[in-house]
Length: 397
Image (cartoon, rainbow, N blue to C red; front, side, top):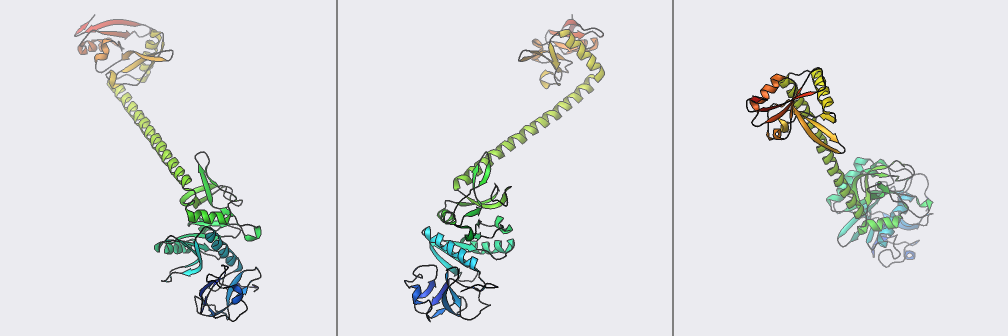
């Protein structure tokens, strides 16, 4: 049977009055009947969808099929292309090769869906859909949901040159055309490594892909970005794809590790920001309490650091040192506190750490705060030296 102009529907299945359902893709037609018994014979065949009379034929592509004796545009099995026939036959062969019972053109009892190929094994049902005609993403999603409502898994297949947008939204595989030789998967089966992320797997045959999906060696990964998935899209593919369970688990573990790293980084950033705010607030309190201008502080700092003669620097006001500013000395890789400038309070640290002040008034105020003998350095303006004093409770000496 030649196909000219608009494609005429040529189903693979028919109903025989005596032998029941016939499947042209099976050697024995599914009921131990030879093709010769019905081909070019007036066999009692009817369409399983519209009950119209059918005949057994062989296309120019060598495909055995059935055809309506009369044109039936209203039949739900009308309008199938040769390419669709070939793809359905290939899908059925791959499912049977995996040890599944594969039946073509199966309709739900309630009429909600019609599977091109329905693979069945151990209570599982899996629809293999050859989708070559135009369809929108919303339509293919809705049809996928109808299958899911009846606990039927599904994968959609397309062998046209350009991958269709809906393939990113539903379980699907983009295939090579049979004119290119053995059918292979163009996209998307992927493997995962933490270093490279998701990478497309090349040179997978349709037979292997279908068998891996049916056997659970491939599982659906709901959303990801795959690099280099075919020659038309070397930059990548984002959406639904198939992968091995081990890769899916590895991707999940890496995602969790990244989330932990992100959370740790966010926590570190928050700590740093909190420390900056706390430091800024401490300085504002220090300047307000001491009444020292920044200009005078710079002069005071030069006196102190110059007199020390060491690699010294002041830190931020610290509650640990009575809100005074610790003076650090650095020697090699070690840093230690040499003194504390202008504290508001004294603590046990004064028993071993000197205090630095800038005026006699502050020196006398320290004497009022002292609960033990405290060594105090008084910076002498206009010089790079200190006067050393000891203060005790109410005493300066």
